[in-house]
Image 1 (tube, rainbow, N blue to C red):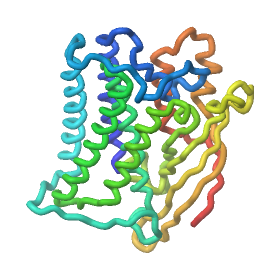
Image 2 (image 1 turned 180 degrees about the vertical axis):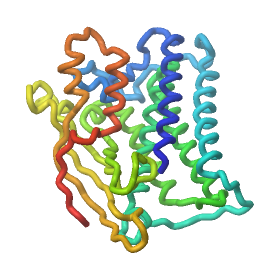
Image 3 (image 1 turned 120 degrees about the horizontal axis):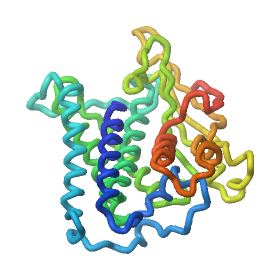
Image 4 (image 1 turned 180 degrees about the horizontal axis):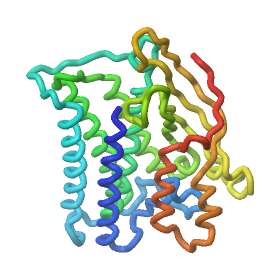
Length: 318
């Protein structure tokens, strides 16, 4: 899956958040802060799940909320479509819909399943960023979560459908399923603040041998991690040492995108990692009275990305 997709959405989201912050009343109606790791470094206030949030008056807010929502959805789709026409579908389309069964995580698959986790991960990231964007525009929490889920899933599904008509690719039902799972996980995290404070879904990327810095296509350099954070456990949050550490488990492959004849290897990873959001909160940002834009941006980045050198992982080859 193309990492540039999530980058484009992230850039668009940051612009929308900036604009939305100028429009919404009051300043923090979404309480979105405490559904992302950016707000997990301190004991948060009690938050009701999305379903319990009080609805807002739709279509009556300053700046026409429905119009801003439409602009966010349309702008995201246009950005992805423009990139796709230039990179994914530059050879054009056919008049037939072509499908392909790519398999899942077997040894005989094209990339050993890393590409499938890529689809799930970027659908997950897209859902969370779009939810954050819709919240910043003034939507109440439940509505922002629904809009984020359906918008991200719609964009990812549209890409797959267009792949089916393109001359270069085919529609993959496996990719479509992983898109649904990733978007669903993103919605679940937004709906469950306690779970979100405990668990992160991250990408660790280190360029593999023979590749430059190419996180989009270098499957041998990608490791997808599920991380359990000590800072998300009340009994460990105040421990002066343990609060900085996490348990990590992940999956990655090597050699599947090497020249023909190379042996592909599927690997499970287990180990510990460093919670950089917690480290920054207790060092660089310790004296801050409230979270600055810089801290929020850093925490958002560390919500999704594991920085190389901050995880000690043991590898087990399948």
